[in-house]
Image (cartoon, rainbow, N blue to C red; front, side, top):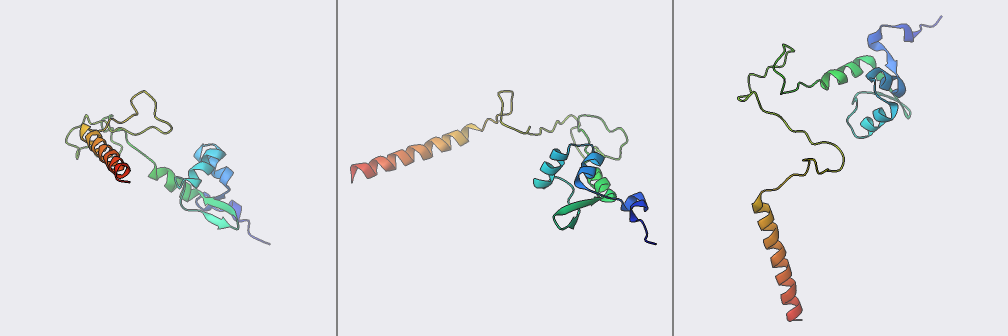
Length: 134
């Protein structure tokens, strides 16, 4: 009589991509997109073209994604904010997608625009000199 490996401890449970997406509580398409962008679980079992994911690896992936909002005071969750000299620092994170007129567009320092203008003027002058002497 064979041993049914599916009834072993839950730490060794192996899931399909759909089951892994359900376990992570995200859509299957979202899970596939994350995997294709290299943002999903890095540890998997490849059986031919099919991927399988262990529950313990998915739990480790979730643990690695835990973040603490720097705007919220330390609530005793193991994250030590004492290293930051200014507790009121707000870290900005770029939103995904195309920039909108709601503050996502980055304004460069004036020196960058001046340098770009000088390079453009030099390029135009060089082209004009070439046209004059040809």
